[in-house]
Length: 577
Image (tube, rainbow, N blue to C red):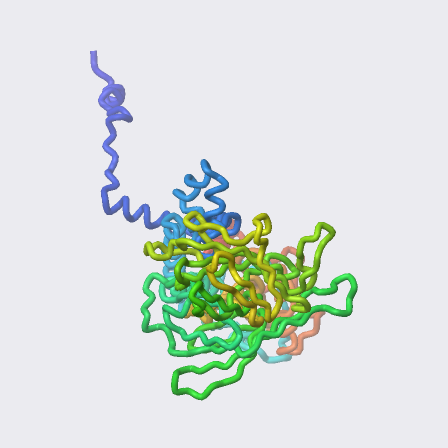
């Protein structure tokens, strides 16, 4: 019995599991990963992920802005706090995971933009695609006739049509031949705007990264009459960039001459609310430069030495003198008081490590306008210093400053000290008005309230990428507007000579994507062509089938082939567009 060769072939056919698939390989895997990373979908996902990743930075306190709040948050949340700190939720913008998203987005955008820019450059330099055989199948189509009396043949009509399109800012190419035609394109700025938008996003990211790497910020409290010199030791707090160099600090100085605060004294509903903060400064770009008078206001920074100086806070600094048990001056000068409410009730801490025989410490509050409440306690009633008063408790002992451990100047550690004065102690608390003096018990010395000054809290920021962020942001907006409101279009116009001497003209338009203005453009081109040849509206030729009259000579046996070719041509034109 003979074997069936077909069945034998089927029996010997390898199973699907036995098919040897080509291995992707290491290089192929890298190429695949690169294509996934540089796709527009990935770029949009990373942009959204970056926005989501920035949310914790606004929800939770950040060490870079307020380390004290972070410490307080950790103390209040004993369980969740350390876990959040491990995930860098208190240092979001300097965390490794935020930097990874940032860098991936940066690389993805570059990978998206560069190939698209090359393709668009080639498209701008290439000629418009060939004229489709059947223009009637395009999105917008029209025909008209040039009477024989005008004496305009097909070749001349094409040249006239090209001139019309050039006036409308189209890029034109005239194609001579048996059936002359012209192809034209406009709207390359749409894709240019799209590319500018994405390049500007890259520029914004690069500028922000530059600021983070080479910029710095610092804070300093300056009392009236004091001078701030731009050195590292001159800052109260300082946050340098990753590649900060001390040589970046300009040798400028700022002297706070006077801080003026204006309060509302006319409105009953808003009486006592601040209206204006005005700091008069004397600045010098260098030690040898001439002094310059400048005014610093809230949201109106002063620019000096490549940095911007902002006014971010203010308060009172009572001037006190502390003498030790030997009668010597152990401390003298203004003490910064931290406001706690709208009446500028301010906390005060005074540390006197040079007092003898024991170190002294004072803690309490300052009231610009003191008054007694119904319980006989002093409270603040107005932010202006109508009745300034110091209310302090005193301590003696070890301030804990000699151990080399940094201490907060606005807190007093009393664990190694004994209390001298207090409202609940027999000597009572210290209450001083301007010019008042109080002698401490046990011969520990004295303290006097000599005067009152104001201070300004300054925020100094050097942001080398700030200007570039603004420039790229404006460019991104301009590119976005161009990509949204400009249209990419192609126009083809074909002419033909009729046996009776007329010249037949047909034109078609095609747009990339949705373009609601394409119909209006077709009408405008039709009017411009008729105006060129002085053709009235009634001379437009259309036999009702959508095909121009000059194409009636086509053989009917080629109808199906022409249909396939014209469909293919229109599809090709749309794809190229």
